[in-house]
Amino acid sequence: MATVHANGIQIEFDTFGDSTSPALLLIMGLGTQMIWWDEEFCRQLAAKGLFVIRFDNRDVGLSTKLDDAGIPNLLKLMSAVMQGEKIDSPYSIDDMADDSVGLLDALGIHKAHICGASMGGMIAQTIAFRHPARVASLTSIMSSTGAPDLPRAKPDVMALLITPPPLERDANIEHGVKIWRTISGSGFPFDEEWVQKRVELSYDRSFCPQGAARQLAAILAHGDRTPALRSVTAPALVIHGVQDPLVPVECGKATAAAIPGASLLIIEGMGHSLPVGVWPQVIDAIADHIQRAEIRA
Image (cartoon, rainbow, N blue to C red; front, side, top):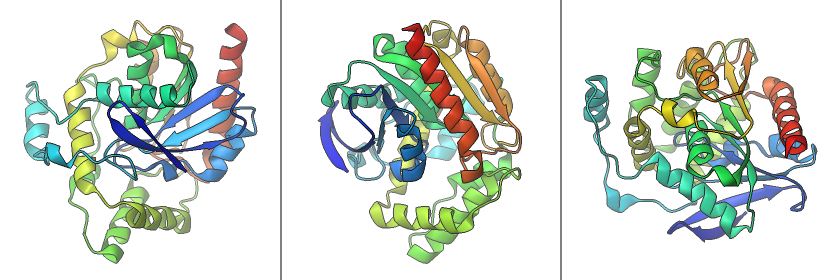
């Protein structure tokens, strides 16, 4: 792993594959470190002839923490959003998109294939309309346009997500495993050992729940991307699970409908996670999408 200075912050990143191959930037979701892009998942993508880059978003992992920005009152912000009020956040999804492009700048990569999961999908979408010249293709996984009329997360899932995580290590790990078990679909085996190991690694690497709160505030404040997504010209692929309880499948369908010419892959049994069982389908879909985009270019 390595660190670069980009967009005014330090960004921790890692790469897989030949740097002369087409670049694929992987962007992870809310409060989730880059290690949730499993190393084997990244190696399998690299084996498709790609230069794979994963990194820690601001406020998670080993990238810069914006502690001076304070801790937002999430319940107050969520209430304001429900009432249709405009809210402020310590930083924006636009800022996080600019972080990603700054990382590409630091690596000397002019154009990349951009793939994001959950909040990472929102960031990837934003890169596609905010920095169109830098995007060879877009893949948005289990994400949303942010349109206010779309179905929301199940109340019990959202309540669990915004519950302050325990500070003590064992209790924190138990809490994290519970979250992932709750949001995973039933169509693929839940690998508790794998999930627990990732939660343990995340805790030991960097425990920063206040960073996740600031990221969630950025999501809530970003609003509806639908109008901007209509301007996206990069080839786009949207992947979503039927059993997603956090970002319902209708959100994925709306994302594909908003982006001109986007392809939509709906996966039965998939929830809000990327279990090992779904890797072959997702990896092949991403690689095929990128190959078509490279041919078009």
